[in-house]
Image (cartoon, rainbow, N blue to C red; front, top):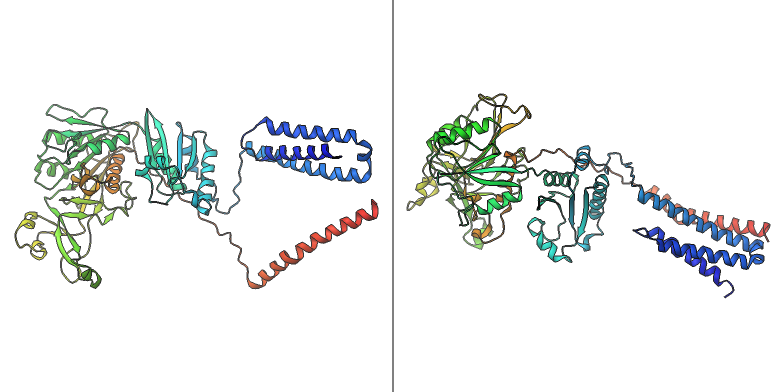
Length: 558
């Protein structure tokens, strides 16, 4: 036990240094342990000075102290690095540098935003987990108002249930941006786990200016607060989640659109609108307002006439689709399909540019008894028309029947003995693809009677015209006849439309950095040379250095 103080002191110094080095939070305890160790080593040196003063002992202690000094230097460098979060990106394409637009978004965050990363613990050894957490660390470094948390949905089951509506399929990682504002919680799921998806989610969740939407009443429209299958209570709730405040609006001969209105919605009217109502709606658009029309098939002379002034052609035609099915497993295996006409149509193509639909390419959006929405061949000056959603193109194999069309005689479907062949009239009906949702943008500086906003001269009037209102109802927004979960395609299309009308959907052109190729390609000869260097040359050099050091010490210090 002669060297007990020395051994204990060195041990305490090492333990204290290690705790200082790896500790995530600063504490005085590791520093105290290291100081006690230094004191014990000092006591040992003082009490055994004659032995310590000998040359061999001196060099041994010198080696130990140099090692400890090296560890101390590393600890200091580590602590400085922890408190000075500065990074350098040396990749040729700037792969790990945030896009300037992302950096601007983070710098302008005025409210705290939390990013919730749902990632299974079993998959956290993957490169994708390292990539996304490195990216989130970079986001966090750029803003004090942003933080992120990693959640294992398999272990934290209750939290997973709370966010179940926004989570991807089982086992697929998900990032959700969350913000508290005015006592309400707003959430936005990142479409992807890259910079583009995360930045879009942060942008959408942090830009939550209150929006006022007024739903027209007085023409037997769908009821805004209706709890029945055909009511809009569920849509009203979803709009509230988007900070869009929905109210009813009755427009009479002397009524005006409220000053705080951002959107006017006309959902499923059963009676035609009056000239006064349509005049007020048109003036609202010409002042930069947004209008949402969900118009089922039927004769609406006033609506059809006044909407022509804004670029829409609304023939009373119902969209029909050929539904392909198999009567048995044998038919399916042999390819013998049967087709029958139905008024339940599925959207085949979405516009890839408009903010409403550009993320819906893989969505299953279905309309029931929808009307065709056409546009004028030459829209009025200053108005731009966009077909948002269209039905199937082409024709059924082995027939002259289109896969979808718009008919003026939908009542024929209920007649006895009707077939697709005698239902489709090539002279009167329009072959698919048939547009069932159209958007119009009105340039207030170019359109006749437009009133541009001097504070926002780029603001435009907007209209979304959809040929179906059923998909917005309580039954239409849920699967299994209103008893199942939310139909995300219907939900997303509706909310995207309202946000677009209100100018809430910001166009962000953030592109992921291209992954530079850092692979080192070795041919056979280079692989053999590298193997020789690693297996023979480097060990031989280390052994030679050790031999020289030992020989030198024996010759000069013994």
